[in-house]
Amino acid sequence: MNILTKICVVVLLVLILLACPVFITQATVAPNYRYYYEQETERAEMYAQGLRQAELANKLLIQQRDRAVKLAADTNLAKRKEVQQLQSLLAEKQLEATRFQLSINSINEDLAKLRVNLDHELKRNAALSAKLNESWAKINKITEENRQTGELLRETQAEVERLEKVARVRHEQLAEREEQIRVLERKLEATGKPSDEAPAGAVVVRSSVKISGTVTAVRGDLASVNVGSAKGLKTGMKLIVYRGAEFVAHLRIQEVDTNQAAGIVLDKRLAVKQGDKVATSLK
Image (cartoon, rainbow, N blue to C red; front, side, top):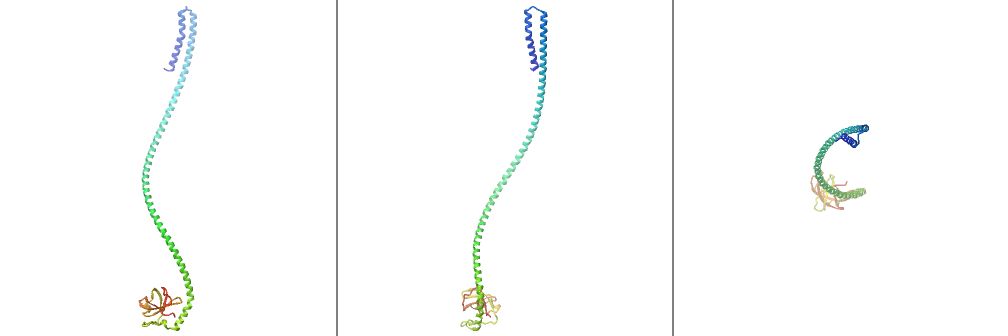
C-alpha cells in the first residue's frame, strides 16, 4: 500500500466520522431542511476544504515522492558508477595480484637457483679454506726458514766482517813484509846453501826457467800446486813456498801432471796453507 492510498483511506474515515452525527440527528429530530441545507453546505465546504487540504497534502507527498524517486535514481546511478569503479578497481587489483604472483613465482625460482649457487659457493669456500690453511702452513714454514736463513745470514755477515778485519790486518802485514821479502831474497842469494840442498839420496833438479803458482790443497806434509809439466815443472824440483813477504817452507815435487803437481813440505817455518804462493826463485 503506497502513501496516496493511505491518504485516501484516511480522508474516507474522516468523512464517515463527520457524516455519522448527521445521520443520527436525522433519525431523532424532525427535519428542518433549511437548517439541514445550511448544515450540509457547511459540511460540504468543510469536506471541500478537507479535500483541498488532502489534495495539497497529496501534491506535497507526490513532490516528496518524486524528489525521493529522483534522489533514489541519482543515488542508484551514483552507486552503479561506484560499483563500476569498484569493479574496474577490482579487475586492476586482480591483474596486479596476478602480476605479483608471477613475480613471486619468478623470485621463488631465483631463490632456488641462489640456494644451489650458495651450496656450490659454500663447498668452494670450504675447499679454498683448506687450500688457504695449507698455504698458511707453507707460509709459516717459509717464514721459519727465512728466520733461520736470516740468523745464518747475520752470522755469515758477522763472519764476513771478521774476515774483512782480518784481511785489513793482513794487508797491513803485507805492507810491513814487503821489505822483509827483499831482505830474504838477498840472504838467499848470499848464502845459496842448505835450503837448496836435498836430503841424502835425493836428486835435486834445478831449473833455469822461473816457475810460479799457488798451493791448491794441503794434507799433512803433502801439498798440491796448480802448475805442472806444461810450465816446465819436473819431479825432484824444489819450490819456495811464501805468504806475502814471509818465507813459509820448501816444497820438493814428487808427482807431476800437465797442469798440477804434488810434493813434500820441507824446511817448514810456518804451516803451509791453501792459497800460499810457490816459485822456483824469488828474484
